[in-house]
Image (cartoon, rainbow, N blue to C red; front, top):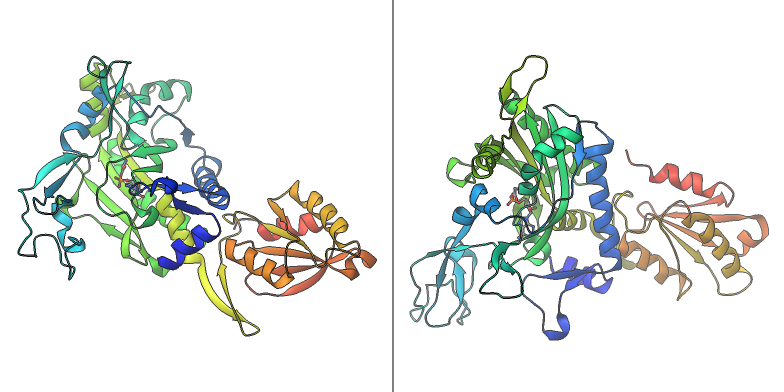
Amino acid sequence: MDKIVALCKRRGFVFPASEIYGGIANTYDYGHYGVLLKNNVIAQWWKAMIQDRDDIVALDSAIIQHPRTWEASGHLAGFTDPLVDCRTCKQRFRADHLQELECGRKPSVHPGEDPQCDLTEAREFNLMFETTIGPVKEAGATVYLRPETAQGIFLDFKQVLQFARRKPPFGIAQVGKSFRNEITPGNFVFRTLEFEQMEMEYFVPPDQAEYWYEHWLDERMDWYVRLGIERERLRLRAHDADELSHYSSATSDVEYLYPIGWSELEGIANRGSFDLTQHAQYSGERLEYKDPQSGETYVPHVIEPAAGVGRSLLAFLCDAYDEDEIGGERRTVLRLHPALAPVKVAVLPLLRRDGHPELARNVYEQLRRHVKAEYDDGGAIGRRYRRQDEIGTPFAVTIDHQSVEDGTVTLRDRDTLAQERVAIEGLERLLQDRLAVE
Ligand code: GAP
């Protein structure tokens, strides 16, 4: 994990937020390559949801919803962690994670193990961030930053049913920020206070729920594998009854073998009719489906694949990270799937003279219209290759003296290190073919 964190900082993928003020707990900023990578992860998720199939529509609902939302959803009463305070060191700990935490006493021990530790009884602590609508805090309405994007989908179920002209089984997909007041140490972007979720609520006739639950387990596992993650480092783990969220009758986590061990990457839940029934009761609206042919009316059941962008990005980075040796020199390389790589091709003039930069600029202009390209003429060619390897660029095009003479370039492959001589003419088509997903 330290190596991934260091690479992310060195190359400006992800780094601690508010660093000039000493940072802020479990909060990170994404730099240039981090944004490009994150956007590619999200784009691939949208592709799998709404381009590759035609039974899912998109939504972007508000972060701050009516406060009754969270009463109905059960988050106000039940979205809590048990916390204990230490009266001696004044720190606060998750009561159910004490064995994974350090109390800060030397030699380091778990909270409660040092004779001076003085822990309170566990108290339930709500994870939702609260704020106020209106200029006067005391007189305003208390509202919450959403802890999951899913509820916005349930609130809009009726609207979408009308304008999207769908009937179950159909899904509503959404990507957006969620917020949780997490106090457990975050392990880089694995657990953060604000994070993006990629959630899809799939509404089905009740008697099909089991079938679609299995379907989405397979679909979501395949998505990660298609984008390059080794299958051996992925597994599905079904929740035990005592682990299930208040709304779920069955949940399985897609787990990835992170450097911190097997941990949740995505949750796939059978939410039954819980959410629509609750919101119908609290709002007075009928949230159900009436089959126009048979006249049958029912509350659809919901299958929900819920993934985190940060955790996906971290899994893709961990899986792609590699170190090898070229000509006795060590290199760090991100073997990212081409669809995820922030930059697809680097254009590098061998020298900063003899017409190399001018021709390289032309090639760059030609390629950038089709794929995300980067021009780099700073430093020795070996160092420039290393830089691109570290950000996971699958191809590098090098312009040399022969290029100026015969209109060919060398095309270097990040993974095989093969270098082949190819014509500048038609280079964009060649690259597009090699970068194509699947
Ligand atoms: N709507 C269901 C739901 O929110 P969840 O398992 O609590 O379920 C879904 O969250 C996914 O969101 C997780 O699998 C994880 O990828 C991501 N996630 C949850 N809490 C997170 C946090 N504090 N930081 C980063 N990602 C988080």
